[in-house]
Image 1 (cartoon, rainbow, N blue to C red):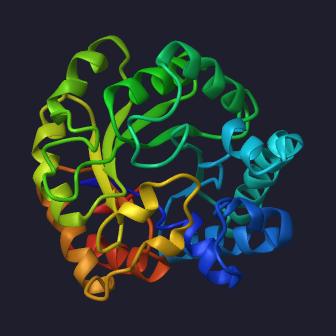
Image 2: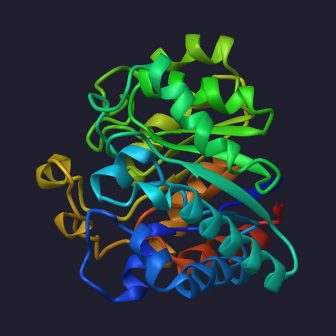
Image 3: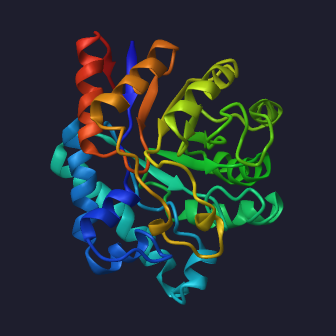
Length: 297
């Protein structure tokens, strides 16, 4: 079977490598201080076997930059993120680039962000800076149907191939973090149909519960889990930092690859990693896929 191998953590890996205390800007500030770190993270994932570099554009929304007092950095930061991903691909010699579209407001908070009619042009502005520079758009960490509607409306209008990735409840993988059943996304996909549907930034155990649901939606599907113990309440407050989150100690490359191979066994054709899942994890998945006779594309 042909399997697309995504990269692992981009933003979190950048923060770890930069070695400075986390800020509400997360990995965005690193692009202003040490953009070479961003390129190195992408290149290491390519060398580990990933075929897609997810550009460090997840948090590059005007609301977040306005809050940080750097609204003038909107276009320059998107350019830096895309340039570093492209440089890594050039150094590696092959691969695709995904333009990451994170949620407006904050991650995991379906109650924040603009209504879909307001959100769509905000996403469209980001996407306009990606035209001609990315191979696909990856709408990430979608916590509810309203978030999906705004992002999908803009992404599909761009003509760029689009993948939609949902985040599910850590204790009930059959539900989005909004509390909605994951099946609530199906009617939306009938009108706004992406090229693939995934689950991301949730515990791998909860992804295992949610995967059979998206498998029935008639699209290529897959998953990339995080390595956090849980999403702490402190991270759901205003302008948090990743210092509020704790990495698991029981999810090394071998353990994580066990989960990923299980997803493939259930029909997933796109796998990778999210926060706290690094190049070593991706390398182990690549090794397992090859050993099992799959072709990494």
